[in-house]
Amino acid sequence: MASNAVEETAFGGRYTLPPVEIITDSPAEIRRKQERVRALAKERNAVLLAHHYQRPEVQEVADAVADSLKLSQAAAKTDADVIVFCGVHFMAETAAILLPEKIVLLPDLRAGCSLAASITPEELRKWKAKMPDAVVVAYINTSAAVKAESDYCCTSANAAKVVAAIPADRPILFLPDKFLASVAARQANRGNIVAYPGYCHVHKMIRPEQVTEIMEEHPDIELLLHPECGCVSSCMAKAVDGTLPADRTFFLSTEGMLRHIGTSTSTEFAVGTELGILHQLNKKFPEKTFHPVNPDAICAFMKTITLDKVIASLETLTPRITVPEEIARKAKRSIDRMLELA
Ligand code: 13P
Ligand code: SF4
Image 1 (tube, rainbow, N blue to C red):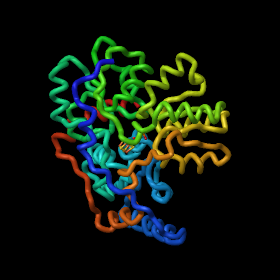
Image 2: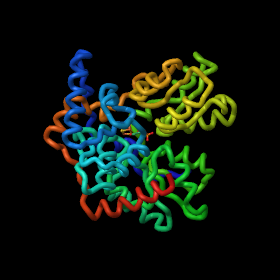
Image 3: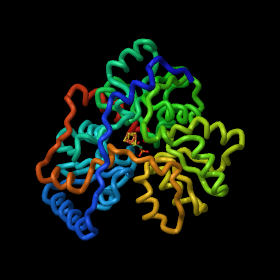
């Protein structure tokens, strides 16, 4: 797969990682805050949508906990007046694009995303100018302005499906995640995908040597890797040459992991993604065992959302996320195309 000239090292300078706040509330205090959230949500006719990487106490108070695809589908369908997005900025923007008449809240504006920060609309325009006949597929982890410059949106749950829906003779510019691009290219059997060299700083740290170590320690377990992981290209190759068991190695979105575990006869899994998902996994499958491939894989952006922030957000109906009309109109085309295929 070809690459372009953007320096990988540029991305670290584009975002500031917020510190991860340690919550010291007692269980009774957490319950009291959760009750306050539910009371305020009722008062405001608000729906709380939480991503799998949210803090456990935030997941527990939400109306829905899901991956990026299911959360955008839930946002598109809601009849609530207010959507509280317990996730990161691009997710709240997606809800605001789909439902401009609703109040969309992001409880902490520091909830950004290193992957979304890795490409700007100006950079995308320059990239497109080099390949004007290409179809542009943007991962949902992008700003609304980048989606507005793209033909299709996709998530980790449907990237291969979106890519496969594009006529085989059209080259594809896939952005911004180079690791997801390689998984989508392989799953859709596409050779004509050019990947932007972006990445998520959390998933990039999930490395081939950690996979080797965990598979040596637990030789019979299933390996579940999010396609944003830094190890995916190496693991796909190893699953082909037999170094990793092909029938026990899976590349899945967070929701895909939950679905897969629900149908698998295995009882032990190595999980390569952000640690927040372990809350849902342990809750839904208490009889199964989960080992994080990298126990340091924590997204500081996701953890900015606390119960206190959710309460303040519902009380004040701020911070509100809106998208300028023209950008929203263009971005919506790429999201709608994805939702039609999903
Ligand atoms: P999914 O939940 O869609 O797999 O996405 C992972 C992610 O990185 C969200 O920021
Ligand atoms: Fe972005 Fe990575 Fe955090 Fe997901 S885990 S929100 S891709 S920084």
